[in-house]
Amino acid sequence: MKGHDVVAVIDFGGQYSHLICRRVRELGVRAELIPYREAGKLMSEDSERVRGVILSGGPASVYSENSPKVDFKALKGKPVLGICYGLQLIAHQLGGEVKKAEKREYGRASIRLLNNTPLFQGLPSEFNVWMSHSDVVTKLPEGFERVAESSNSSNAAIQSSDGMVYGVQFHPEVSHTENGKKILANFIFNICKAQPSWSMDNYAEQAVEEIRREAGSRKALCAVSGGVDSTVAAVLTKKAIGDNLTCVFVNHGLLRKNEAEEVLRIYREELKLPNLIYIDAAERFLNKLKGVKDPEEKRKVIGREFAEIFEEVNSRYGPFELLVQGTLYPDVIESGESRAGAARIKTHHNVGGMPKGIRFKLIEPLRQLYKDEVRLLAEKLGIPPEITRRHPFPGPGLAARVIGEVTGKKLRICREASHIVEEELKKAGLYDKVWQAFAVVGDDKATGVKGDERSYGYIVTIRVVESEDGMTANWVKLPNELLEKIANRITNEVEEATWVTYAITHKPPSTIEPQ
Image (cartoon, rainbow, N blue to C red; front, side, top):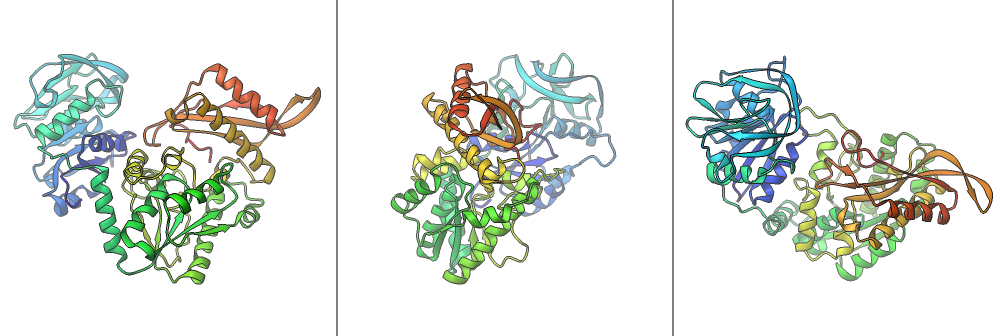
């Protein structure tokens, strides 16, 4: 947290906790997501830098046994804003009452301002917000007043008489809430008095300094994949330690069409990554994946094989003491390492797939960043748009998009179909407007007719989503004409693809990648 004012976001397991952090960062102030159990430790170690505290939403009820709590005394008198569960926790712990609502309030609602408050300074007397709660505050703690109400929540917003504690029943961090960003800005700047010093320019400088300090004179090995995450990590490390960095690009045979050749060209000719080693291990990975159907096991197999290759590179070109990876914050969270009350969703190739006995010390300069921040950082570093605008791609590659056993035939269908999807989106001017677009192939087959003959081939599923950080996502309603064109091309051009379907499930409840 060195050098920046910080707003601490205390995480109670809410689905929007990361979004709160991102909104604060968009305002130019560093935000850190802290599990509620570690709130006291944070304040004792970094109290001077913490300008304010935001209590996130969460799925629990404050009156339930073992519901998450926070010691308000440990917050050392910093300004506090409670959101949803955070509001209810303020009321519950400071002497008010919270009860189950007679009618759950979910979705769009209108709130009316009742009293002046710096939290709503400059806002209209009535506006729409996004609600998501089944409990309500029925009695305020002593020294608090209500400042807004909705049709189902008489205490839609509250504040303490000393102007240090605020609570809102709605979610100002989501785009559906009108004036949400202004509400957060009022809290951060007018109430917390934080200074906006967070930017990707500053982050790059600090990251290079930290890598240089951590690496010293030691040699580092960086796994690069062609994605924006690993590429940014490599460029930052190159700036920090120069030729003490060796980059290795492993072609595991699970890449997109023509990806290996294009990535190598950019790395060698444009970015000039030092000591670049290219390893074609396609046959090796496919042999290891034979007979493996479980998605979690596939990730682990791929992770172990990468680790073995790095060990071999270390023996031949090293010794290296450091391994650089482009792990992002969502990768860490989805692997279940740090989020309050979160279950492990999947093993991430950078986080959970490496053997415990691996000798390298990890350097992860992007571990606290979201994907959109990494893209901004990539542009600042002068990384070509072919990489900065490239859609996110899973570490296990197409193995995450081939359901069941990974075979050469299914890989070919998945690769060719995905290329058609991307190509048509680019022609339609939509590629840069969506988060991810790809094809999925499993073992399901369906009958088709090709060349006046019966054909029994694979079902291809198209997945196109929009998102801001990959933590949540909505499926994209593509024009029917474009869907038809994509489907026609896949069934006509991809051998043994007979049906095309379109995935229309949001995240949550689904994940973006099928595995």
